[in-house]
Length: 512
Image (cartoon, rainbow, N blue to C red; front, side, top):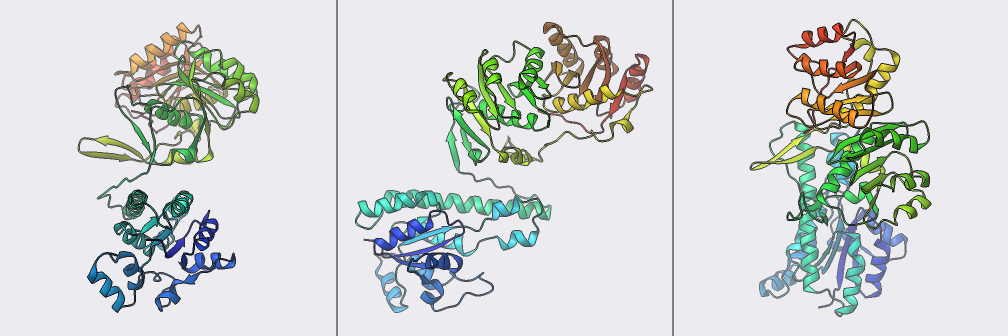
């Protein structure tokens, strides 16, 4: 049966005019509400306001406008049920065959840093989800659209099916509605739950963004949910795998720590090398690459400036899996795209905003949810946090700040030797901190880099003096660490014996 009557009520008006004009051209009567009705009428679309249709005015500053039997009765009545037909006739409730609704922007509202509870509550949509659910429940007869991307599909189907849509399409759109309303309700519940500090429940409902090539291993399937495309755009290369996504997120977090032109190389989410330069990113590349010339094979490169051709030519000489940048100069992109397997990823501004999203991990029987760790803590007023007899020099303080920003992104136990603008040796993920120290020293020696006069950063306290002593014997003259060990005094004494300067940040940056 051809669609005769449609109800349109949207917050996101993209594509709405063309869709409404398409419905009007096909003889569909259009009902609408508030701002949507005005928008359509102002642009020449014939529309009947829902208040005129129901004979009941909007109430309470628009909070009540579609919560009416003539609306929901029009959506929920079964076209083949005799009792429904008698009820509809008796109460003069005509059918509504098509509903187009997208919801108040609750998620966008609460994403604002200064949002108030009152503002959030006013952006909780009531009538919209109710209409969507009524229409979706009755999808055997009613077409329901919650995504502007489906407008062209519906218009095309009206032409293909004599003014109606196919049942398969109605089923797909109904499923989309229930996924959308469940994610909307989850966002509201999570926000209010956090506001009330109850944390009794946590819900996640996200749309499928893409199927990934595979998980940790090719025999493991993996899928990516959410709005990854709002943060990153793949410009070239094969589809992403699970590990690619992890690496991209890790790379964005690391590069976000730096304001100077910076390049980092990562492998399995760990930094292999990081370098800064005044202007020429090739210099930053050289500093990062020299830290470890073996590990970057098949790794990830990230920069915080647009990719120039001069750098693209240099880094294309080694096999790289992913290159990430805020932009790519046209000639650099063309050069890199000659490698068909190389993935080029553009970081969008939202990528850095997403670093503040909570960390969610599976746990036996459920999930763990943790606040993010988006910035290096404890770097303010380092001069006041000196624990040794000798204070660090100005150059050592600068190197400390650099090393601390890097070590935060190395898997625990983490040790980083650095100067003010480059890493020199990195030890990651060992069961004891002294082993990470030994690995960092060994890696520097393998790379032919001297640690004499370097600064060492430890992501957590030195539990014993042995780790610090190993670093000092390797050539470090200063150390930055959180402090907090029962043996802090022993560690400080060991530093003083070797005239090593040390500061305690007071903040730990474990990464598991």
